[in-house]
Length: 419
Image 1 (cartoon, helix red, strand yellow):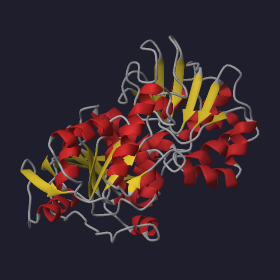
Image 2 (cartoon, rainbow, N blue to C red; image 1 turned 180 degrees about the vertical axis):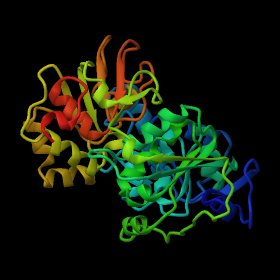
Image 3 (spheres, rainbow, N blue to C red; image 1 turned 120 degrees about the horizontal axis):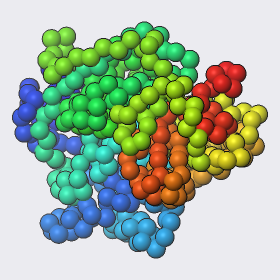
């Protein structure tokens, strides 16, 4: 079996499962945010549930329109707070303690290897980076799971992606996943588990793995997953709130397909409007001027991402025609960035630094685009109107390219600044 099939078998109480089977599986963690939790709360009440299955396995994180941007957002966030209080939930994260959900939960050790996690947010697939099966579901599935501790699934087929060769300078997890999506398309892994493997992945730090698994959904994937190794074990060692279980794929496991990539040939990569699969080398886009750069999100708002961006922008100024918005993904990341004086570097460069929030990524707040404006962002989607006006444009890149572009006033690379 693949690692994905083994996790399902364990959570169904069976020795074996096969792709295509419909199964009922126990879940280790359920999460929802201020957009999706209110629907789940409403459905939970409709089905007459008396209590949640486990007060310490349901996480409510207001991060999309929080800190509350308007009255409607405030009402939504209030629903999470009131429900969490009513049912004494142990994993409610108020503003000031919260972070972007998919950065916060791994950081806090609330997702561990071997888990089966569902979330009412499509980027729940992020946690596969730790060797867990995690996927986005609808709010009604979350409501039922909150009551029963279980959810139904069709066991997905697995696609294996093998990466080998040395990464070029500044190339990281974001470039690998953008290159992959550009290769297979936005439906190339439809309802499949994307298993990332190979020597390059084994050397990739956890933050790069989280970025890759985060964007599995942009290829249509049901999940992204990486077999745990020493890097995974080191990451979870002092943070795991529960004992991890380490699974690996069998040598003779069946895959729906296998693709291999020589990473020495993968350049700094940018997704152009209006699909993540519309990829081109960053070096070919020097004629694209920009109005806004966003560094943050559940894809690239981690400490290592901020360090990378700060390294590029240190001692320089943001181009006068550009606004740069930097959003640390959690309070812990914010504090450490402050301690390392990364925030000083951004503010001295004339960037705006925000409290943790999803903010502009989904066209929420803190950086909405006007008609005709163009943004380069370290976020995960660039659909029509994703960050604001339907006639605006969003390009996607890694943090180093984003920082260099903020200085240049157009899409560019760190090499152009002398790196």
